[in-house]
Image (cartoon, rainbow, N blue to C red; front, side):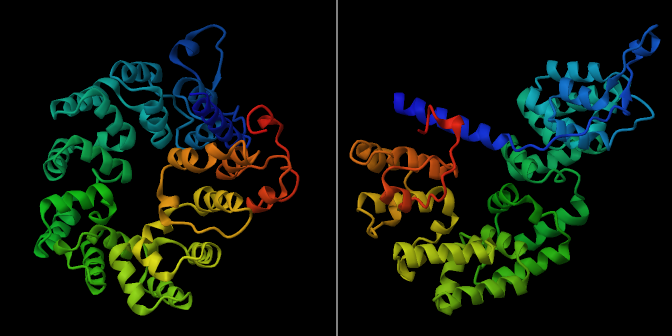
Length: 409
């Protein structure tokens, strides 16, 4: 229990350290916002619009400054406090309100009786719970102004099956509900169904990568043809959605360039085609990312190409936060020699890795626990007495962070 508390405390300090990098924000004192009551008072007290967004809506200073650009400074919202109170009563949490106003600042100009109340009642009538309504509106606030919102929501509910799937898709594409169903979605659905893709698979595609189905039909047809050229025969291919996402994120030229890069790093053409079918998202990484990870796996760890073909998902793991720190632990335990590392050492959870390799050796190798945690969090600690440990973890310089003197050190 004490170890878990220490880890949680470390993580808290790491996150706090990163959050301190927020840049300063300008005070727009020229943007004044008078409430109706203040305007009628004898001695009105003007409030900065930026400060109102921070205090009442929970926006960060930076987000509040950006939001002000989209608000009319010549007129004030009729009663923003009433809108915020209504949202709170409807089950909107502080995070929902902050996200909503940050994405769509003009929401504060909404007419409470003519727009907001009727639309939220409509969502409730369509079977969405209070928390689901809060999630949907905060993710896609502009959808409340759609005149055919009921028809659109019923279409997506029918296609996706559950409100949970609908919310997941809207989180990944805030314009999903406003996309033309007749002009884009239905033609793209027809293209998929012609290739034998079931509605269940289509729902998975929409939930995972909704922007695929909202593309122009001619563009979507070209993506389907490229995926088929790579050997993905739609319904029969488990990685069909990932293949579509892969070709959508890479032009043909960029895709070919990454394929050639793998060949220069020792992969045969057959190896490249094999890994595309197993893990097409590998080609979404930048060329620099691929070079670095290939160098790490082959030159530092000593993996064979065949091992990478068997476990291409290893490329998804962070080089700085997982791969290198864990390899460093194994080197320290081997006295600085290159250890025999298994792929499972990289795949196991953080808790399992700590319990198997780090915690049992805390007494044997002083500083190992602290160095490993610091490396995972990408921070520097003061010089470690054990120079082998210092070198294995790649700590250079003597930077000392006093914030961690009671935790890391």
